[in-house]
Amino acid sequence: MVSIFRRGLFWRVYLTFLGSLVLMAVLMAALWHLMGEPRRVVVVPPGMAHHRGGPHMLGMALAIAATVGLAAYPIVSRLTRRLEALKASLDAWGQGDLATRARVDGSDDIAAVAASFNAAADRVEALLKAHRTLLAHASHELRSPLTRLRMATEMFAANPDPGLRQAIVEDIAELDGLVEEILLASRLDHGPAAPDREAVDCLGLAAEEAARVGATVRQVDPADGAFEVLGSPRLLRRLIRNLLENASKHGRPPVEIELARRAGPDGGLIVLTVSDHGPGIAPAECERVFEPFYRPSGHPEAAGSWGLGLSIVRQIAERHGGQVTCAGEPGGGRFVATLPAAMR
Image (tube, rainbow, N blue to C red):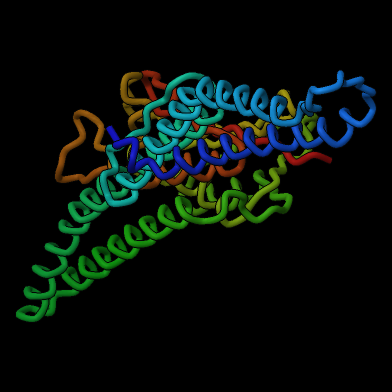
């Protein structure tokens, strides 16, 4: 507990309060003396001195000020003690003790500030933990293609086989793709909250990206109208591409993509569904597949993790005010992205 003689904030607040009371008492006495007393006509008997009431009034005012000051002492003391405890928590957190949290007492403004600090500290700690996990997983995922690349280059130096050259090219492409995903995930974490805003035709993007991986675009209902989303064309293309590539890599053909419109609370919604005919995803793992570098059960370690693709998909959807979910169904994987439609 902080010594009362070292509590600078307490003494500043309390002495300011006492000084205000004393000043108010003096002003009241002066006003009474200057304005109230001359209006009275008092007949003083002979031999008695005329006694004005100013000193008496000043004494009463000072006594009232002292009483109020004593009564306010515990209130000011508790208030400033909580402020000093909050400051101590902030100082400890700022010096690197990220587990420090402020004590929340009551429901006043000081408690609200302490709760806000705790919430911000929780978010920062979670973000740092996620970054450490991402770094650990990224280093593990980079190790495999780097090892293969080193071995392939040594073998190619001894025997320039075209097959080895193709393997080197594929390993370099894998490394390039992984680094690109890590950089994109970092930009999504630290970039501006709102992406570039323009009307984007999701049906056109879906048709282009489906052609790249040999997927099928299901026929849409002409009555649905345009499938436009207000957002970043680059990020929305990446969302569709990652979903299609994930289905092509981890599922089985045919891979299909379907677009539909649905009513929403603030207007229409664009619902984009990507499905395949693979083994599907267990319901217990439907949420975990969006974690960076998650490896589902039964997935061999030699095949690597699922990388950052689905994690990036969720980040992009959330930045556009939407969401993405995984449907745990037997007989195929299915991912559903729901985005707010552009208002016309």
